[in-house]
Length: 95
Image (cartoon, rainbow, N blue to C red; front, side):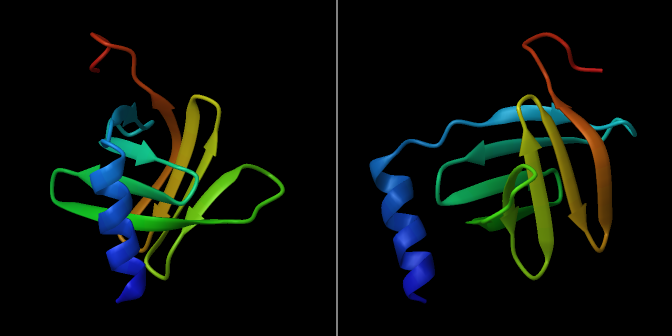
């Protein structure tokens, strides 16, 4: 419970800005990431992923999902969503 209260407090202090990512299969998601947590939003759901240590990329992970970020590139993996090959979308580049 304390973890979620911390997230709520951080969200109130820092406005959340989202970037759009598109994957090789044309799946799109919105991402907001800080040094503590990433919020990954799909049309039908959302994942809150705490930051984890990693030597290969910036990593956020929970029991349900993992997100790797490397510059403009992303890989998102959940049981129902294996999405490698995602990239940040520039304004006006929607598919």
